[in-house]
Image 1 (cartoon, one colour):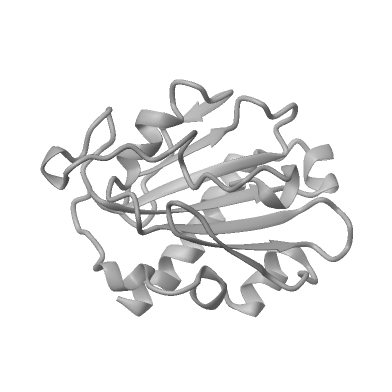
Image 2: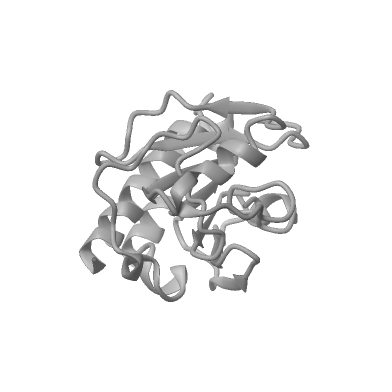
Length: 190
């Protein structure tokens, strides 16, 4: 999920092909159960149209570049970058295809992550984890994955700008704030 800052293919909470799993086995791999699931309709369409408003993007990135959309093996993504050249960026992905929700990140990413943050406060009551990819050389970027149903999740990849890095800001904590904003917008669609 770090396309905006690393050029890697968005993985939306996976490392490699999605594994198959039936919903009867969810959650698994240590992922928590989602107590109040959102309907699948909350994640329909492109994140470019529903994840963040233009005002919210301006608040996070200053002037954002035009969004770049992609359709991955897990679902649609949208990538915005700061037009100021600060290396800040946000990529949002909806995991609508794996049918594994947050369990997929626990199974495929946790064993390989450079940093795994599973003690994030739930976001509006929904379980969330953060991670930094194993190949990342700094702490500029973090992916937050939020389970909105046992079989559905969305992710926010935040790459913080130069001034935030110099100020010692934590990309995972800042990413949690962006993920909270996205969840508010998704809940409004449900």
